[in-house]
Image (tube, rainbow, N blue to C red; front, side):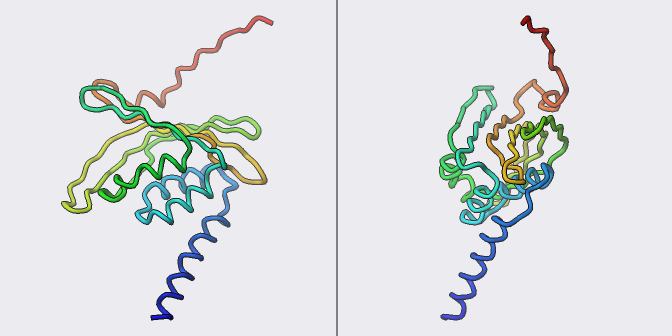
Length: 177
């Protein structure tokens, strides 16, 4: 029994070290690692992976639309947000497939916009639910690597295709000096 306990401690320690030592020098690695962390069933491993990805004071905002288009908004620190999401992870397994991505960056800041296809599988009944959502990640480059400083997302809702969110509709304004 002592050997099994020691082996488990070593495995969890190795997972924590590998999350902290992972190479986050590219935006692509950070984004992929974020979606992997969100899909992680083990709460401790998910928290360790997110801790390696977010700045210390990183924030999250989510806007979820119900079938009647009523929106519920949650925001706060990434730690508080995921601590409040345990019931979701207890009931469902998540899978996130990034469909499309755009990245805008300048120097040490970057903004990532993704269209994501999410599948939730209910653990007891194995029933699947799917949705598209639009994700935005704001990243900062510090100490030779990228960190997520802010994440926000909204799910697709009735009569408004989330695919349109990725289209560029920026209007440039000439500012007077």
